[in-house]
Length: 310
Image (cartoon, rainbow, N blue to C red; front, top):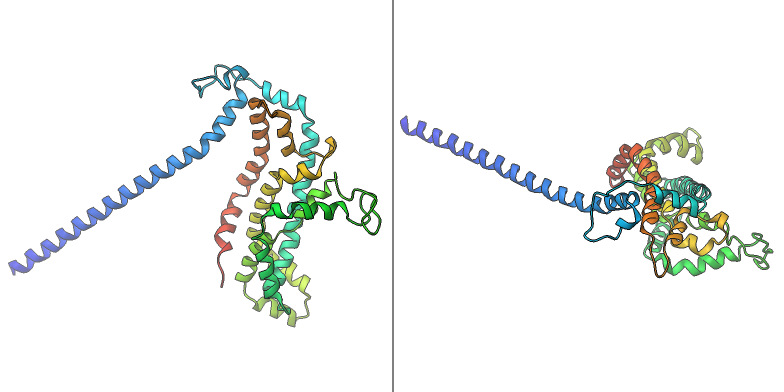
């Protein structure tokens, strides 16, 4: 009897030791993970913090060595210089128009195409979809020149005749930035994941009741993929808002320029005006940050649900 009690006591003691070791392991692992995550977060926030400090410090302190994180004085001269140098409000309005219109077209056409590829069984839909996915592998820089000439020779636009001759097409027009990005393959692929995760029975029942495809799409499926639409909206807004190279190619007139094109006013081959450059960078980041803060719930939910497939 005593031997049995001793064995039970030893087993309980061993369990307590094992539990204590497990808790110690969990605490140490979490502590190391938090330290690593904190280090990564600090590394990621330092450039933004440096930009903020640079935009507020006096000009003579920007390139001073050793670098001081705390400026001797706070000044808004760099922000004032930005508004005096460029037509900020006009550029801001152009950027809003291009970005919002591009976001809406991507959401509308992308969700329509995604619904068709996931819920309508038409001939060759898998082949067409795979070809579209293959096009994502083509670097965007390869299509710059063909896209430019398509817009330049667009029929009946910018003085062109029916053959696309005699004018400038959509060159130096905001439509030249909107049209090439009006719908993207990534948006179709992203939204298709959401539609695929929804059961087909709802569409079949609606078709039996006589509902058309547009009604099925709008009344049944679209309300169920709102998180996906919100997430795609954030992605497309950020992409359009930060678009730099293409607007510099197709836009020329000062009244048609976007905010991303304003950076060239503060940088020359021999000199970089860091104060105003950081100031306009921060002002450009504000709309994206505001949208992300207010739509963070949908963004996280959309990313989490985007990979789920029944």
